[in-house]
Image 1 (cartoon, one colour):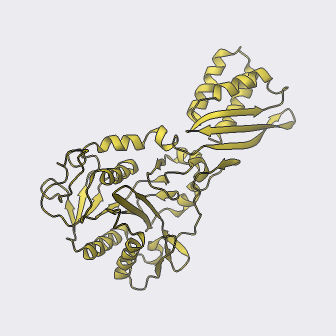
Image 2 (tube, helix red, strand yellow):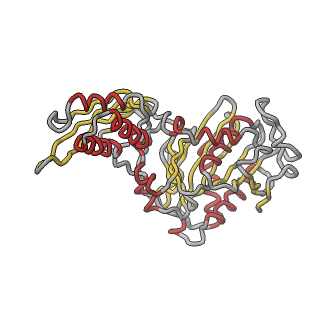
Image 3 (tube, one colour):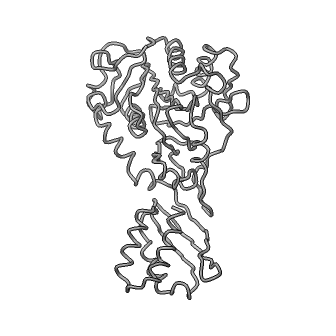
Length: 373
């Protein structure tokens, strides 16, 4: 049963003193099931942050159901260049987000359900949550063969991954969230979660590729709405709370004071790219010169998303050393992103003599470098 989440029917979830408690007041104190009315990945991730930071979960567990428009979400300690096809994502308008939990990279769209289980640190139990999901699935389709693995994934028919897990454990509270593939675009999933970039050396957490399948492919009656209602019913029965799915607006400052600032922070370049663990790229590419090709070697060290060291080895007769050095110096300290490289190219054009051939080579070189960003 869906219930609009208003001030009149809010559950009393006592917040810490960091923010006003006006958002969560009234009568029921045993637990809560929420569902976001937003499909914005940053807004929904902000809800997770807000509940984790501000809600007293002692004796009041929370289940949060949410879905996103097409987006790729990387783990807290991951490298987006290593995990996904950023160029394809830019072309298709796919959002990139970095969550605050660990784990691997996932693709979200409206055919994927996200489940977040909030508890106190003492009550945190990922396997119990996954068993709950399995019971919910079997309640609506007893013939489904779904099992939880030791890695806290859910496998369909013993081989197809339908759910992956990540978590965040704080000082007193914790949350475990997982995906559930219902009818996601598997073509997009496989193409977006495949990095085309070569020569990356990084200590960032790496995702483990898996063969996936949608539940809707197994049984066409298993729609997202059916699955969410079943999971909510099983959660309510397990925690002995009312089976009400309370609809929330993640931008509502009266319910979640300060939440829009959290969403804005999650959208910043400094958070999405700047939090990438230090890494390096050692690669090369060929450029046409007359009737043959010349090899250009590139070695770049990136720290906090910015270029720390840049070495470009190009034949002197193709690009003079002093020009190459000027280009390398321009890269130092800049963001490792195509936009800044385009700006750098424009600036260099203005600071150097008008030489169409030289500018053409600069453009070729910068376009090649943008291709690895």
